[in-house]
Length: 502
Image (cartoon, rainbow, N blue to C red; front, side, top):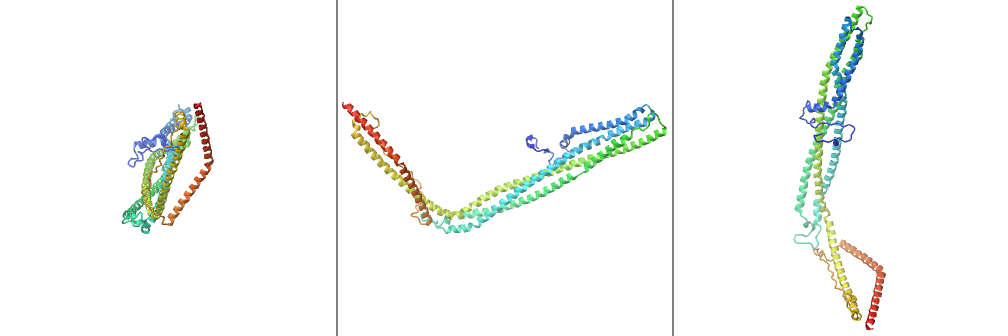
């Protein structure tokens, strides 16, 4: 985590382990104060509680021993026993930090194991994902190279095939007799040469990427092996187990042995001396056990420091290895972009293979468009003539009405009754004027294209005829209605004329 990282980056996993980025810096020292704070700060409260529990346990045990000596507190004969109890208290106070540290380190060690296992799982998952992505990339690279080989091998054959396709006389010109003369051969050869050079460069980059991936795989294997060795290291556990066993023996065996076994009502001096010798032996054993615990405390601190240093070193190695894995992924992504560019360039060579067929289709398309243009123009001329005839017929009808009836009516009675139909203008913008005139069809393909066009025109003509026949009753009804309306207007005009005459 960096200094600006938020809680949302932790995810929703059950166990989350946070490592400071400064602690994973290869240049950082394992004894750095920030590193120690990160490793020990989370257990400060737990250590205080463990120390308080250990002190309470020792106090209870000493209180039991003191209860046995309390009735003899005023007797100077039993001064030795009182001194033994005080000495035992002092000895146990000296070794209490060893037991406290052992308890704390056992909890820390368990958390550290979980963290190490999580780091190992993360490295394994990251490397597996990178390997799958690289495998898919290599498969794509092989497909692109195979396709490129096919296209490059067909360049010369395609150029020869273009020489075998003569151009139509309408598109011929000086120095352009066949289809091969219409393509820039020199540019195509330079293009294929550049493709070959780019292919060699990409092959070298791919070899370097494979070498880098192999090195990263070795780094991952080495890091995983060292992490497994760290998980199998039991030096700290051995020290804590020895300290715990010594402490259990001191509390459960030696400390209860300090209880005075002399009757309260008095006893012989020989029995008192025997009890003193026995307690002195117990104290000697307790002192020896405490010295061993203090020696184990130093060993435990050294083992833990080595463990922390090894833990930090493994974390830095894993972090370094993961950075190398990410480097391989970035290099593969950049190389894949170049492979995509190469694939698009390779597809440009497909045009040479498809050019003869495309040329034949183009000739057929030119013929089809010119035929359509002729039909379109003819239809516009027919529409212009038909509309002109309709205009002339309508104007003759209107002039006859005005000459026969309209002259007898006031001019402002029916406004617009004397208007004529204006002439219509049908204009077709010029189009497809640059298409060459190929003349009559010279190939079966063009004949088929023309036949298909004629068939299409026949179908459209039949559709128009059917729609015209369908609309004939409606048109007749409209004509009858118009005639009835004209009769009504004529009758009204005659009545008006008679009224004026009267």
